[in-house]
Amino acid sequence: MHASFHYYSCFRIILRLWKYLADAGGLFVMAGGGICMILSNFTTVKLYRDIPMPLFLLFPTLAILCPVFGLLGIKVGSQCYEISKTFKRAWSRHFLSRDRNLMMLNGKSVFTFWKRKVSTLVPAAFNMGINDTVFCKLERSTSPNYWYEILSHSISAILSIQV
Image (cartoon, rainbow, N blue to C red; front, top):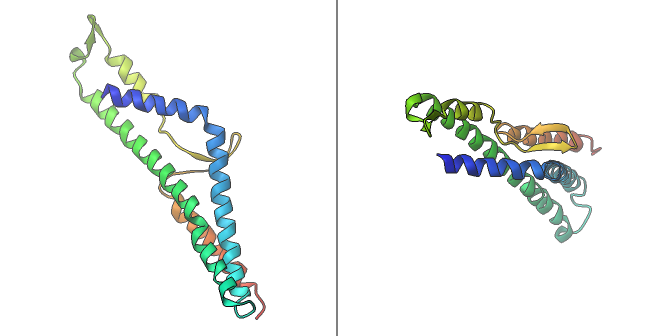
């Protein structure tokens, strides 16, 4: 119990030290992957039958490979957030279910210390933004929203083509 709490605290410290770099990196990787995918979809439809087939196959391949990095970032970031929420919930249940008299250290109760310590924890989360401007938080609902935005922009770009 205390070891997992210690590791979680170390992880939070590391996350705070690298906060701005991780937030900006996530934003640029996901935005770059989304823009590359939208442009590749548009180019695939626009250049169909206008360029030779081996060169044409490059654009659908890019459309598939570009968002892989963004999706990996979403997956890791959202799992980190969900697992830290689970840890906090488990620690809260653990300390609230314990008997106060069992948590003694040198004759003094440490129950209130640990109860306050757990209640002040905030789940570890990766945000996407620059400096303190947060555009979105990586949680479970981020991936469907990301795909919705890519799909809607791809459809509007493809529908803008004059046939």
